[in-house]
Image (cartoon, rainbow, N blue to C red; front, side, top):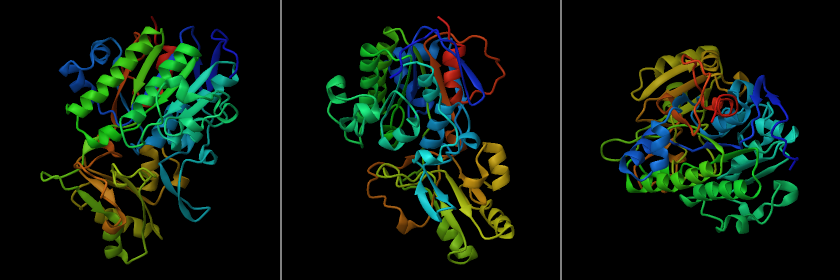
Amino acid sequence: MGASNASAGNISVNGRTYQRGTAPVVAICVDGCEIDYLEQAAASGTAPFISGLLQGPSSLRAECVIPAFTNPNNISIATGRPPSVHGICGNFFYDKEAGAEVMMNNPKYLRAGTIFAAFADSGAKVAVVTAKDKLRRLLGKDLQGVCFSAEKADEARLATHGIENVLDLVGMPVPDVYGAELSEFVFAAGVRLLETQRPDLMYLSTTDYVQHKFAPGTAEADAFCAMMDEYLRRLDALGAVVALTADHGMNAKHDQHGAPNVIYLQTLLDDYLGKGTARVILPITDPYVAHHGALGSFATVYLPSHEAANRVIARLVSVRGVQLAIGRDDACKWFELPPDRMGDVVVISQKSYVLGTARERHDLSGLKQPLRSHGGLSEQIVPMLLNRPVRGVDPHRRLRNFDILDLAFNHARA
């Protein structure tokens, strides 16, 4: 990593300026952290540090970007800008140039530099730790610093990840990708890095496996918050500015009997327009579908003509469970999305519904509990908590989760 020089001045990235201070900044994205998780755990007494943050002067609320999925929001936090600037508008999309549906985890799809890379280029020590490896390459683009995932911590090498012997450092084995331990590894690594290397800027990004499985206030959810609480306390005790937010919220997506409330859009549109006329893309899709079955509350539809798009919108607005069906231009304007990477129609489901393609294309065998998922407007409000008073922020300002580093560097004061 570059030599630390915490007083070297301001860093400008993507039209925003960050004022470097003397205390290390630890920004944390808790995947799927609906505010209720924190509030319920605090009320139960299992998360005393979080309780203090919730009652403190810097207990704020923010909006995540839509679609409310992992990649768009983590990259928005990393760049300080919405998807219209950085280009990452889902976990998965239809690449028109390639004529294929692909994962959006290749750095070639990123259209803006990250705050992490800019800080490292200025001489700051920077460390990024993610739960899943799918994010590591995007977050680590052009970063001369530490960047590794809990999922593949044993594969970290000095030349490619800026660090080696991670398992020895953290004192934990490589965790199962489907479990709370994957997130705990991220927190444990963050504490050890702060103790041993003291980065000027560190970003920790967890996984939402627990939130997909368990509702706020359950024993499992409270246990997760209790685990997180202890690591947050330790980061605070080490003198860091701790700034916590989420990439999206999480809600129940099932009926009173526990069956998923799914609108199968591809089947519906095949019946309406004729098979093969519409192409439905679900941006929630990623390799880790056991906890959500690739079912989320946001979809985009590719159609052969403007007339077909208008017909689809008129049809979908009357479908039970659909909250919004709008054309690409309106969607990109409202939600700050890149037009060239969106379909002709954007569909968002209501709070308790999800969108699918066709029943036979979703493997729900991994769902051992009633479905919980995200992606829509009902998952847009997320926590924004800091362990220092936040000063000089316009009370009427619309806060976004990607403002977290602006608050941490420019407004958090001891």
